[in-house]
Length: 503
Image 1 (cartoon, rainbow, N blue to C red):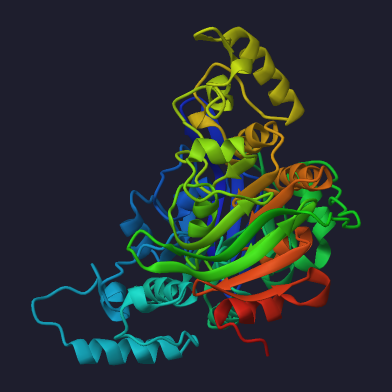
Image 2: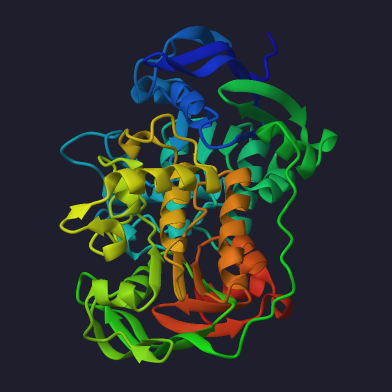
């Protein structure tokens, strides 16, 4: 066996019930290597890595770590064998310090030397360029700093095999560059790094080797130098995918949505938005850029009537929404695709037909006297499935088992069929694969081209720059810039997202 091989997974299979999520998958990781794992939603990437991290136990195949055959029964087993996994949603205790989070559950005793532990962690972090203040509390930290704590936590416990799940999902361009520098230093020191991601540009910039899964099966493992983005996309999807070309933007002059000096508080009673103003014209997509937690949620909910405005005005085609109910705002022509697909947007225990009429069951077109016309609506639901290419086995089954992409299509389909004057799309392609992302883009562009005013909220600057006509940048609940995609760069927007300063 190759002595540089840290991981060798052979013939791995995992099933849930009768469904095989991984089938006969081979995967390897070398010392000093950055290995990207690609695939569409439901391709089996996370399941395979959860087996390596000890979260799941395989139903077929075997695994070797550092040259020894292992059977992992828990994450603790994985950690003791040098495997650490950094999840997309961090597992940190906010009201503890960085050092306390790092040693939590690892160092035990009644009397721990706090100063010595902080010094050890500071010295240890310096080896990898992971600059942190061990005494700083986690709730003070940025998303990028929290991610460093998670990486340090794994390394400090002896991990030399590191798995990162969508590591750049909520980072600014500057934080992404810092992360890539850290990962390269870790690889240079002998660590093996696995990245699960959808972002092709980052794969081509960072990875040494790339493994592609499709429908639970390994399609191939290639060197980065042997492929380009188009070839990788075809490996993932199984067919050529043409990127949607954005037509010349011809937005109208009429204002669809007007935000005028609004102040909105968050759940803690603190101002999440302070004196924010901008407009969205009919036939225009305006992107909202910002690090998560800078007022995006409160903005969307304020427009939709789900959150009270303290000051200012929100108008749809010149008519104020202040003091109106959610139902009245919907009737004014607002459609809202929230970030929480199951919960705020859809009801998982209900079927597709019932979810499609959640907003308009009370209207005459849906009723015959006191009774809902369920048979007629079911026929409409079948047409929606076909129109929006929704993959669903049983139209009468609860939608909770559907993939994120299909749930998003149901949500977008329902809102678009209302023929809205204003459409808010909050993180509509988060966690979606390339093919589904293109389908969602197509739906949003058709709304824009039909004269709808579209507000597009995303943390991914590539998506914002590609789709938006104008970009509003939020930082600390205030507007730090309104720019056009052709007149700015990702780095400039990143600087505005961090501090409101360019250059």
